[in-house]
Image (cartoon, rainbow, N blue to C red; front, side, top):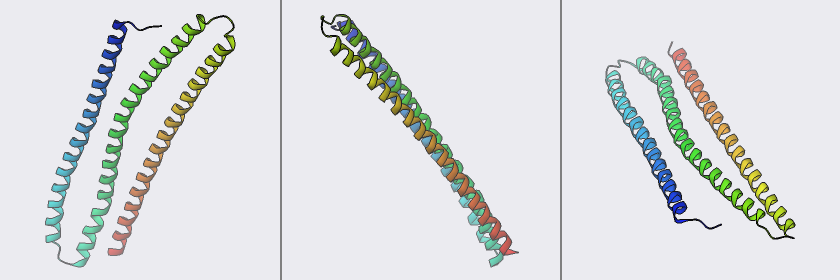
Length: 186
């Protein structure tokens, strides 16, 4: 089966559209990341100013310990929120790329399956064994691809669950540390 010039041009147009779409999605992810970092930097600068002024007004060690204890938990919460937002941006951008890849892989698989079906219909007599082997190979490749997709999805789910667990553990540890510091100053 030979491809016509129109089919080749249509395929190239589709590939260019996909390329530009993915490039746009990548830039959107970068824009979100830059926006997150600018917002975090502004907030950190403002908080640093407030903390510096509070430290200059400290009169004794007890006040310094109380100030320090009061800073731990909010810092951990802000760090966890920043990390979560960063993870969400990365996962969202990755999801767009995965979706595009899966779409193109499905198209390629359908085209290949069509090619194999066309070849088997036009196969000469006596080639039934070769045709059966080819169909079996295509089915095995499809099954392998689906298995890989499932494994990648499971790995992504596990990574997200681990990230959430680590974030929650860090927040709990910060809260416990802040509470311990509060109790020790009394």
